[in-house]
Every structure is written in C-alpha cells, then in structure tokens.
Image (cartoon, rainbow, N blue to C red; front, side):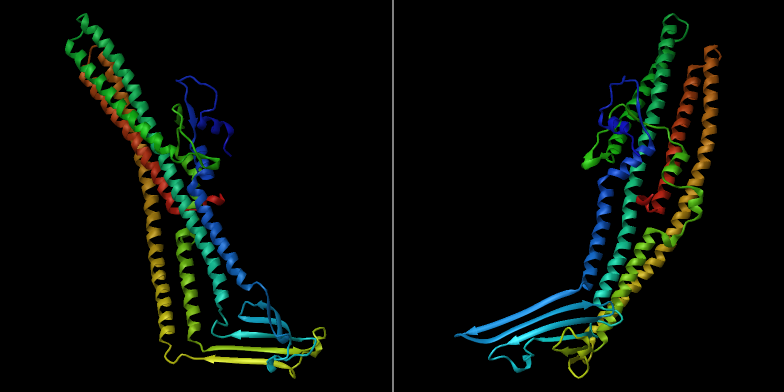
Length: 466
C-alpha cells in the first residue's frame, strides 16, 4: 500500500523542510506506484479486457434466437396473401440447430404449399449443416479461439507489464548510482578544499613549498569538475525516473529536488521483484508467458487447420421437422406429419479447399518450430542471467575488500603527510585510487542489481496477480 505521505512528497505538498534535509523514496514504494498507476500497465490490462469482450462476442453465436417473418399483399380490396412465420432457434455446441416454429397463412392467391390449418401449423425439428462442421463448427471454433486468445493476451499482458516494471526498476538503480557517485564527489570536494586551504596557509608562512599549494588547488578544481559532471548525471537520472511516476487520473508527477533514493540491498531487490531462491528452483519453462503465448498461437492455428479440413467434406444441409396443428399436444408430433429436406453440393477438384488446409497446417508447423526454438533460447537466457548474478555478487565482495584496503592506505598516507613523512603527490595518488575503487564499487553494485532485474524481466512472472 502506498502511504499518503508518499503522495504528498511526490507532489511537493508536504510541509516545508530545510534544504539540507532529504525526503526518501524507497524502491518498494516506487515500484508499487509504477504498478498501480503507470499508463502502460493500464493499457496492458485493457488489452485483456478487449480479449474477454471478444470471447463474450463469440459465445453470442450460441444465443437462442427468435425470428418473425410476415408478408401481406392486398390489391383492389382483395387479400392476395397474408403469411406469418415465427420461429425459435437454439444453436447447439455440435452444430445441430433445434428449431420450433408456428406459421399461419391465408389469402385468395396463397401458394398451395403454404396452405396450413386455420389455427396455424406448428413444427419442431433439427437442422444439420455438414459443411459448417459437425465435430468442429465455425461457432465452436470461434469460442475456442476466443478462449485461447484470452490466455494469449494475458500472457502478453504479463510480458508488457514486466517490461515496463523492468525499465522503471532500471531507472531507479541508475538514479541511485548517480546519487551515490555525486555523494562521493561531494565528500572528496570538501576534503580537497579543506586540504587546499590548509596547504595554502602553510605555504604563505613558508612551512610548505608554493608548488604544493598549486597541486592542491588543481586537485580541488578537478574535484569541482567531477562534482559538476556527477550533478548533471544525477539530474538526468532524476528526469528519467520521473517518466515512471504517475498518480490517479493519468496525472504525471514531477520529482521534487529534495527527493533522494533509499539505499538498496540485494535482499530488497529480491523481495520487491520476488526473486527468492525457492521461486527460482520452481521455474517451469512451459509456464513462462512467452511459452504460453506461443503455445496459444499454435493451438489457434491448429484449430484453423481442423476447421479448414471441414471444407473437404461435401456441402450437405439436412433438416427434419415434425408437424402438428395442435401445439399444446406434444403427442401429436409423429412421423406421419413431417417436413424434411436435403441439399448436396460437392466441388470436383477441391483445389481451393485443399490449398486452404495446407496453408493452415504449414502456419501451425511454422509457429510450432518457433516455439521449440524459443524454449531452448529462454532456458539458456535464464541460465545466463543466473550466472551473471553469481559473478557480479563475487565481484562485489572483492571490490568491497579493495575499497576498505584503499581507504586504509589513503588514511595512512594522510597521517604520514601530516607528520611530514610523505608528499602531497602520494596523498593525492592514494586518494585517487580510493575514489576510483569507490566508483567501481558503485558501478559493480549497479550491474549486480541490473542483472537481477534482467532475471526478473526474463522470468516475466504474472506480476499483476501478486
């Protein structure tokens, strides 16, 4: 849950704070904000809603239907005919259509075949079209394809949302990296200035050579240049982060100048992105959204191929209706009174139908090959991501030790300089090595975090259901 204070901080509505005091935006709060309000996340959800609407539309093909057909002709005070035919149809899953109807016809010039009893004629029966399919009708295929499309869209939604959350997470750790680098340069700028002022005063009284003051000043100026460059990088990272900050009603949020990132640990990344070791051990490639999406495409194409196979069948439409003048007496429906029909049409060469079937089968095989290839690529990509995380973790531990040792050497050299046993050149050299190690540590930590985020993107778990 995103706290109200977080909203006020983002919008700059919280009470006045001193310029030196920073307000913290944690990684967990930030990611929750992105997941809840980013427009792309909402668009992804809309895609799923549209696919569900398509499924509802396909199911409409099985809705019962009432039909009324009425015709009347009168000319020179003569009723030529007055025909009324009403029916109630129920499509069924296997292509058989149930139909009940009532017709009442009259008129002086009524077609003899339309002659019915005075109170009308009732009928009840079935109709079957072999061309439209028996084991798989167009309506059946439409519903099944719509269901597959919903599953496919849900998988694609998870991929899309994962991608935007990945981009947002990368923006945060880049912001954190820029913040840490700026802090390093701010700290060493203060050190350089303090050292320069002290050496300058000592050189003025002749305790140190003037050249030492010049060297200290150059170092101080270099630290100013580095800080200015890091400040620019921090502003750029802050603006990039702001692209992912939104609140309700699609209102973008401007990141306030006194906002700062929280210090993030590897455990924080794992918790927010659900990268626990248990979850990684339970990985199932076939349950990956990419695999689900591709498999649903294969299923849809195979359904198309089965439907196209129906085109090879003869075009046969048959119907059979029982007739009775007494609609309220079901026992009057018998085989003595009936209305039946049969229509038959058979293409001689079936070239159009055979071509359509072969094309559908080829498309299905093409996507099936792609699915097999994607499975191997995905497994190798996951292995590569896990190996990268392990490597960066090892490198980060090593650089931590290097940083501590570099700090020890720098502090020792500074004490020796204060005692007159070292030179300013060596102090600055040790300091530069320490700064270099600190920046490398920040960079390696950033790469380690990004490797975890790459794994999160590759796994593409159904994030909206978490």
